[in-house]
Length: 68
Image 1 (cartoon, rainbow, N blue to C red):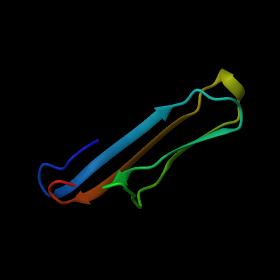
Image 2: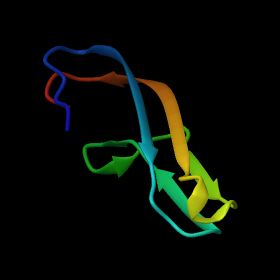
Image 3: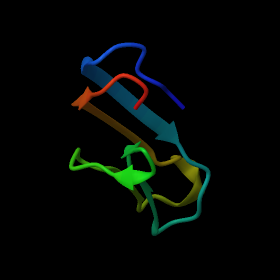
Image 4: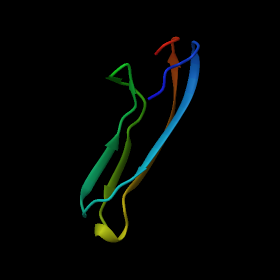
């Protein structure tokens, strides 16, 4: 969780490494004040079974008010 100390535009990046079976899908969504943002989702699809864990990364910018 992050709270903006001052108003401005902030860069966020996020990622994951999953532990799943084949054909599982992971979706990571950045939320602002509990609401999904328009930033892209980080998605990962594991089509290789348990040998290769699914990974996902994303980067985006959000303009926040102080306290967001």
